[in-house]
Image 1 (cartoon, helix red, strand yellow):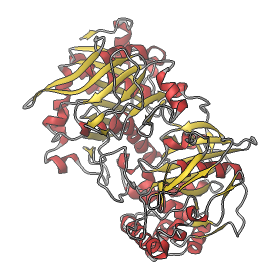
Image 2 (image 1 turned 60 degrees about the vertical axis):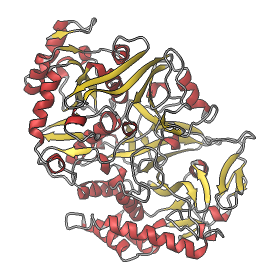
Image 3 (image 1 turned 45 degrees about the vertical axis):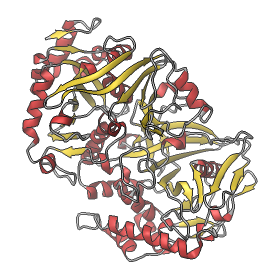
Image 4 (image 1 turned 90 degrees about the vertical axis):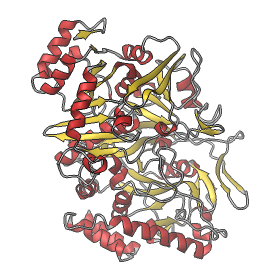
Length: 637
């Protein structure tokens, strides 16, 4: 075996391998068989490997049995990083059906053997044999972004250096020399792109094999979403399931008002639910106002003149670690980031000036960045508003940039206590002629029992840009992280229930994005709701300020809302007052939402779920009222 990394002496590599290799003989055997092994020591080496010795464009291609030479992606060397573009538009966003389970441990997820008709064990051996014939990249990383001691290893073909660099950014490389004999991998990611074509019908398959105290992830495709990002999330969820804690699918932001009050908001939701957007400042018109919405029927526009934003200090973007060791005694949930970099979607940045802060970071970063699904021209600057086209005139809906945490201004590096847990829902327009579940007002207050079932259902919602999906309402399930979990639904449901019960001082709200009834709002309504909550701080609502929503699943609706002297029109708070909807349209949409909840919650209503959880679900199945959910919440806490 040849070690080809120039500044990584062979003796050091041998010592490192021998330290833990005896505990993982299959990995040691694979590495000793491989044609060559590159062990990068730093980010610069990974970026050089990403270009595979090319100055301008590197073509990532493989000889695939029965398919010939398959070009998977082009990597372009830009002034501000590398731009990766997949030749197949299907590979430009995550397939929600990508996860397969290979082992026989308890799971509600699809098994590899059931989908493809043969056990994974023989394919596993084929993958090892294929990898042994390649030049490899191997490096240690930390699952959990360094916030949790969970050593892991990456093994993949050297010509896919961009994938390795993406993983290293997202999770954080471990310094082999400094870690030394203490390195003890508990997980491994194997990358084998040709197997997508030879064994998986061309689909984005990621296979999880949960061994005793060791988690194998086989990424059989080159898109990092379901493996380098969500595959690592699966590793953390699997560990949390066995130890009794959860990594939340959430962004977190510390919001500092102009009066120096601090409110910390953790925003959860399915893909497209506004997690990354919760970390952004409101987008303003040329005159400085914020557009609240545009009526899709009449074309009427409404604006808010907010003279000063709250200051934002980001904490987490997508994965919030809620480990027991960081929980305090204040009855509020404590979280810290489970990632070393953020996988930021920039589909909303469609021209210069939409998001000046993000644009500035990406155009002139302190170190090179990784761009996906964005136009790249060799030796030119990759611009985040120039999205790759899936077809002529049809821009890709999932352009991304990976931002190391150190590049993000005002980033918070320590755990924070969460004051408000919000849940985002991507809602369609709703009118009397075309009623839908888009009946949510701008802000709803949820009793904990209702907040819990919203997390069990986790609606994916309207026009999701991040994943391949059909139109219509779909569920991502428990806490919205179910697509990435490997175990049993009811176990995670109980873990979320216990987490909420332990954090009884944290409050819960519901926020829509894209539409509020017949008004197109994008994420502006979410940003304004955040500004409102921050300015209120911990103040309790007076009885005349909130009332039970007409649809009980929405908890309490706001009766009035005022931000810096501007009173939000009532029809943004209670959509049944919109003339385009009326009571009939609202009730039809409420019936759709209620039926969907009943359908999804029935999956959890089993004897394996806690008794308290079953009572809350039965309340929903029996068309319970908001006061009944409040009673269940008091019992829950």
